[in-house]
Length: 111
Length: 121
Image: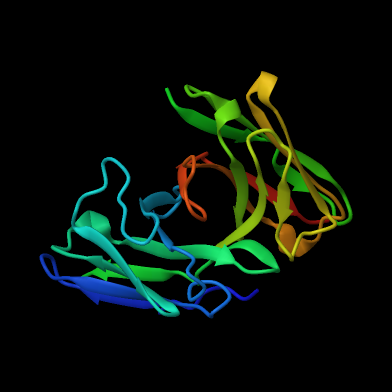
């Protein structure tokens, strides 16, 4: 099972919004499999930001929101802040070959 | 403090083996499904393995299936990953991660700091 496809990079100015896509197939994202999103700062462990498409763990700002339709999921970060600059990964059930599969990752830059 | 701490990484020669450990504290380890995820230098995340809370069901990623074995000891609050026949491409930071109970798909809400495995002669 190949990794889910994400754009390599995205950027926005402070206060703006940025949306990251995560594209899979009918075997993973499109197969009614909810997507999770993780944030990773350099040298740090990943942090869960969104699970089951749009749920936020305690402590995650409501500036982070998720959606999913067909084979594509999206993460939107509204009101961009400097601390949002990080790598973001989506993940989902991976079908028959991989129980779980991560996306290729997107580096968000706050310009 | 609720945390996961990995250990057991280091430098190993190609073809060698390594047993990674993940020790949990601050929560009831036996209630949680657990996973191993790795990240090669400068690369993305790669899921490796999943084990249920009792250890009764186990899943492996296609890239490591046949070379890794996951296990857990709930009495010791510990998770393990045995990796055999190590190759240069196994060089990575290995993370253990906890799943939110009853979550649909991966909802890895607690991660360790990672342990670095370097495969080189």
